[in-house]
Amino acid sequence: MNDLNIQAIEAALKRYASAIGHPLYVLASTGSTNDDAREAANEGAPSGTVIVADTQSAGRGRGTHTWHSPSGENVYVSIVLRPKLDTRRVSAASLVVGVCVARVIERRLHERGRERVKLKWPNDVWVDEKKIGGVLIEGRLRGESVQHLVVGVGVNIKTRVFPLELRDKATSLSLLGCEDVDRADVLGELLAEIGRGMLRYEREGLEAFRQELEHKDGLKGKRVKVGDRVGVARGIDGEGCVMVERETGFIEKVSSGELFVLDGEAEGNILARPSKRW
Ligand code: BTN
Image 1 (cartoon, rainbow, N blue to C red):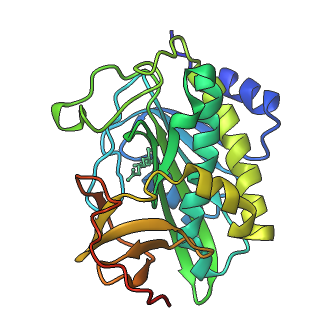
Image 2 (tube, helix red, strand yellow):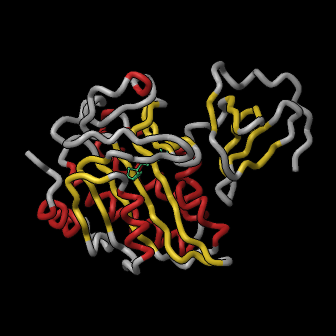
């Protein structure tokens, strides 16, 4: 049964009172919904336009990563937004969307362990340190203002067998014991959550998400590497940067880059802890 059809999605958008999802395009297959949404945005698609596909042949993650996008299993969606945001606030938006994705997953997990849903800065949603969702925000910026953003989200729902290279790194709602999840329902809830979340971010900034970001921070206290910097993650600051404590005790704010979690317990790995702080 195809649970990701236009009628089911429209009903879910209504159920969750989603402000976004109008217009809605549902594709059986495509290369990447982010590419489709970018094209639509460049042609003037309104804020709130949503493109969803049952499968992607060239699903993309951040950097050079691909996004595993088999048919009939998961949610792959891209949203065109035209927020009134300064370009400096775009990168933290992926944390906001990550919080929205995490909330929807938490509600599905119920007693199965909602406390296990975490964010891995800057754009991953983790359960037990395995990726269940990812956010890819791309956009067209002019000067200091945003012309449009394309917010791409992938959520693993029914995939039980991942390609070998992802097997230790990825999970899905099915693998976590949530069977018979209706993809249209998840999508409707996700779009409603992202619509509200991004509006709140636009109006109130990251401060409105501060507590939740802190609670869901899956990196805090872990040894990490970003670029050539190695240290212990010490939380996310008010601008969405991850704070990395170097061996010298100096805390560096990192605003972008791919972050790797290093093996070994962090606490105690730092031998000297001078009091220097910025
Ligand atoms: C990441 O984890 O690096 C981000 C993954 C984003 C994947 C989604 S799936 C829908 C949209 N289309 C894409 O090609 N990518 C995003």
